[in-house]
Image (cartoon, rainbow, N blue to C red; front, side, top):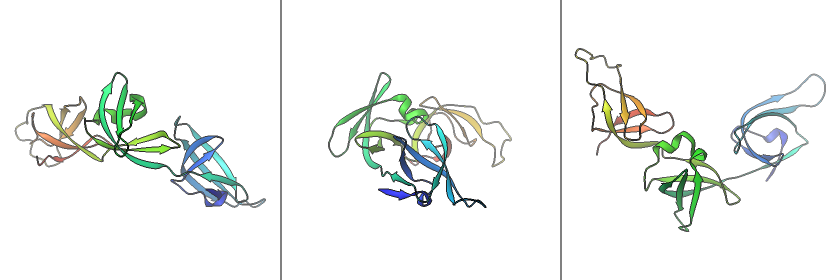
Length: 188
């Protein structure tokens, strides 16, 4: 769908110079001389590079809509992660680097959303939280009762997280997948 340069907004995904870009910042500029334009800061969805570009209102760009499709994580195979489409049952292999740091949170059977463009995977969105077991936690220090005190603990996936003093080895906790922070003790 074509949109004019002054309709570009933060969060839009546009096809520009043959690449897909997500708009991260916009500023409408009206200089003393000449016509107004939209200054846009964009980040490439594939390479992760940034670009600052000016778009005049007379220019048009192609706005792209991505298809979000639920996929189930099946298993890791070498440096690849294997996902299965929940509707067609087709399998897709994606490199571990494609998922990035979030790959540490992948669990067998986990449902994730793959953003697709023309049959090509663009990004993977994990659930906001996952339940993991604490494999190692420092013992509670006597007298450490301040509510804001936290101690380091190691999760079953090898990542470290700060947890409250009452959390010990073997307990299951809910962890935020975006910033790897403790949310709460798991109810199960």
